[in-house]
Image 1 (cartoon, rainbow, N blue to C red):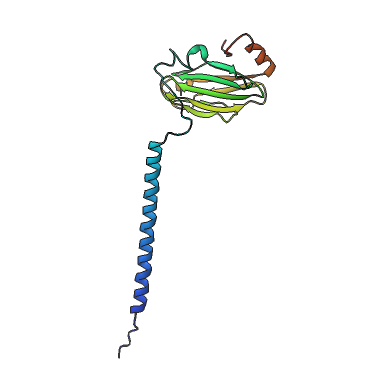
Image 2 (image 1 turned 60 degrees about the horizontal axis):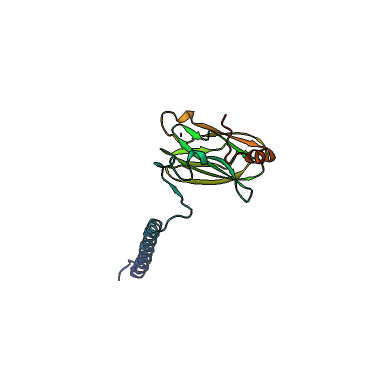
Amino acid sequence: MSIEPDHSAGEAVAAGVERRWATLSIAIVGLLVGMAAFIGIHQATMPQGHVETADPRTLHVSGEFIESNLGSAVEPDGSVTVRAVGQQYSFTPQCVVVPAGTPVTFRATSADVVHGLLIEGTNINTMLVPGYVSVLQTSFAVPGEHVMPCQEFCGIGHQGMWGKIRVVDKAAFLNATATKRRLTCVD
Ligand code: CUA
């Protein structure tokens, strides 16, 4: 008579549990691989929403970002659109004027390399990527000035690439638009 306890029933249970865990982990790995493949293929085949392009080679020649169209413009709904271009090592316009208490949409792109567009004291903080239009909305509560540095390293002159936002009284802004189609505060 053996005094060894019989382990066979316990071993069978342990093997069953191990198989279940192995199957579960393979299923989890399979699910993750499937999700990664789906997202990769989906993003490759579906364009992202609201991607707008602008050819950096023809920015200065034609289209929305020609120099005469840069600056601030009043839209029919009373909001303001600011169009700007970043290039090594400045913004055009270098000084942007906007009215206080008004929805402002920034539309900006780059003429050469990747630049940054950050407006101190606001939610505006984005990259300007050549070939694409960056669109951002904000509003400025009170008149004042905000600095607008390029915050992406763009070359040897990067640290000198600064613009300025001047927020003015809304009535004064609208007055000025009566005689000029595009406003800036470049002296
Ligand atoms: Cu442009 Cu840094």
